[in-house]
Length: 141
Image (cartoon, rainbow, N blue to C red; front, side):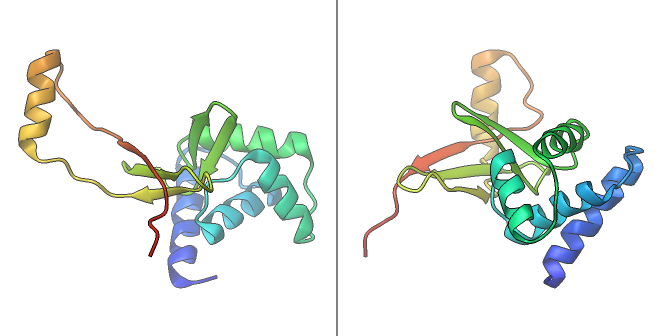
């Protein structure tokens, strides 16, 4: 596990402690996988990968643990038409989805203050945060 992955895992474990979530062996497996891969994975992907790694965990356990972890903002949950995906980041960030591979990448985007002001003026709502979804295809060289 890299230094970054270890730091992300430590932060996730700290969030569990702050939320009074017990860190079972299965929860730790899930958190380690998400921190190591950096990908957005379905519950099925998580189940398959953990079992392939020799870390036995049941379907129900994966779903229950992901629900608990996402409801306490320990992991990110993205609802898609074809199901939920889970990721390691819970801080404010945006996403880029590759329409060819369906891969989702985390990106940090900061909008200029005048864009935020324009949205507030149009809606009458004070903006506290935002998440932008980008969609595209890989550029050909």
